[in-house]
Length: 341
Image (spheres, helix red, strand yellow):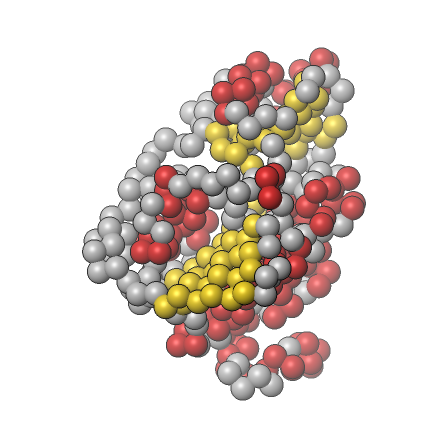
């Protein structure tokens, strides 16, 4: 189609891409896990670049605090409490209606991570926690899927491209990541908007190399950037030949059958609570019962109630985010008290 050729003409003119590379991009599938500061910008760039399928994965909804650094969303999304994956698709369709969008509003966990990344040409990290990155690394190494790690906080960010069996994997770089915690969060040190856009753009660029069939051009370094101090550091990385994940192919996280029942939400003073998957959940009945006791705000994706100093946002699958606490015990207690379980 003539308009399709025109849409991507400037990208095709890039010598490293050309018509063959653009065709590969248009036949590719990119999975973006986390659609916050990084993921929303990655999705925007890749949609405009013509990636054939974008799988949009996020557990959260748009909040007013997101608008400072998450460039895909607007005030209407925050006002309507739209799930980020849903809001992202609504905006992206208006940017490029010719590609395929797959929306997943869910928490990524050992029970679903392999399904989430299955069939991907590349997976991109828009996350805010070490646990899920370790999980994605194991799934991508097991399935042989390239993935790109990115992170940002305050004024600095990091990035690494991981080609299973070729480059260092995430466990090679951060062997203790599954047990790592940090006092540096969005709540404590904030995020400078421009650093998120830079790291996201860098991730998207690495993804386009992979999608266009130019894995030979991806970075083999762990990049670290402090935008405020104008500092860039790069460390050449090598595979750990004794790495339990990419060398021994051991995947302990994937073998965990118990769901992580609570997890903190970065920058929100909130805890996510997952329901017991062994029992069904009736969203409509819960909405009916809660609306008799509380003023309830709701849309087709979630409901919101205020319980004193706390707020509970409940999704249709029974998953909830409890605001006003960072204590998992308090969050679970409130969930049990008002939702059940």
